[in-house]
Image (cartoon, rainbow, N blue to C red; front, side, top):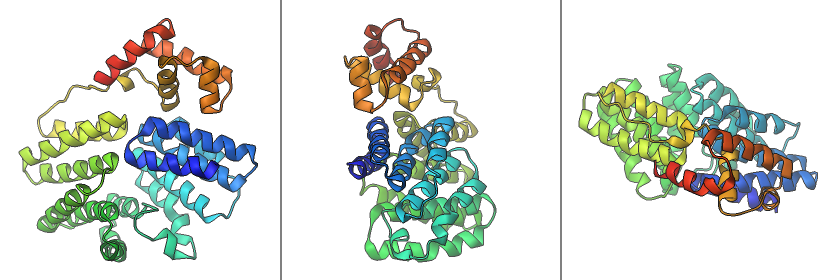
Length: 324
């Protein structure tokens, strides 16, 4: 059951159902802990860290990953934890942290699974970090075998991720035509899959490239589309990057993401939505596999941050936030 919930949460993360992913990842971790499956706990906690990391809830993601660092040699746990750490570092803008987090994946002796396109999506993050650190030639050489493998399998998501990274490499190397072709390929590949976070990341990278190339209209179209995607997911650090690029284009978008002006964490948002749906504290605790006291603690924070006095006010307040 723990495996099922962990992989369901992972699929929901990629599909953009992030609030559901938070619930199911936490349930996976709780079930693994009850069964005393240490290696599975680490994997489940790593999956649970993905959404708070992308939403800028650094403390929550970091705490989950600290609990996932018990000694283990289970390859899936090593890959899960390393990738989650890398995504947290990426959200923080820490390129060195991304490389350090992914080093255990580079050191795994059996490469078939960890390098198979479409499952462990780490190669684009690694290349992006190399570019950010000025190691452009190294990033170029690193990408080549993974691009070939993704092309051989004709898998759209890896092709898009790697083409996005390729675009950044070519732009940093001073080859704008090749960069534009790579970003166009990434966008075309994204049309074949429904991965809202990954699509927004491609649009952000392509928009930043076009802005620097002086193509303002194309840049703004891409950046505004990326921003809408990040706002819908609550991916605050990435939305802020879009805002900086748009500001550099002469635009200053209003912050429509009231959810994060209210400061709700991922857990608080999930608890608020379940409570707004009419669940009692005991029912919410059972759903999330936590104590009733934990739910009471989260709800007190929710009421304070949203400026409401009772759970009867939650549906209207949450609807207003979602409407922006």
